[in-house]
Image (cartoon, rainbow, N blue to C red; front, side, top):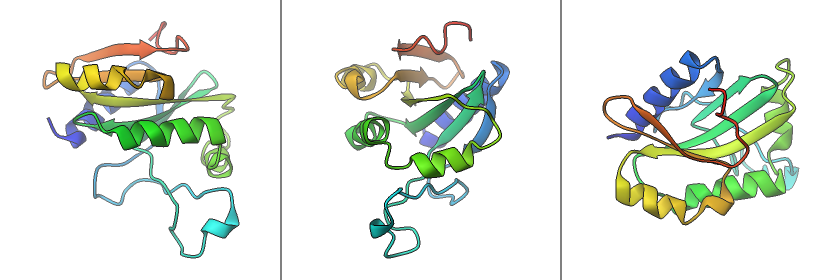
Length: 153
């Protein structure tokens, strides 16, 4: 399954469960929203240090920040961990979410529902707040939900 399909399945599932999609990006499409780091010293070039989330969705005063892949990709787990702990993109996120009354942002990963990829991903759960997989039939499986985000979904 391609990353685009992971993203499409997640977008449909999120919307059907009452989440409002704020932005999304398909690989190499250039359609996503670029978030800039808070520190101006990294802005020597227009997009230097910027990141593009795969999906940001909001519901009930919380936002979800997704990185999506068709396989385990450790750099995305590390990126999520740094986003959560260092808050280096908080100004861009606040601006993007302005008007949505968001009080908390949860960060996680969505991947293809491939057993070996899920097993590898589960070795890095301390870096994320949720892990979701999807398959070709559009089934969604929540493997990890540290904050109980999806308990009512």
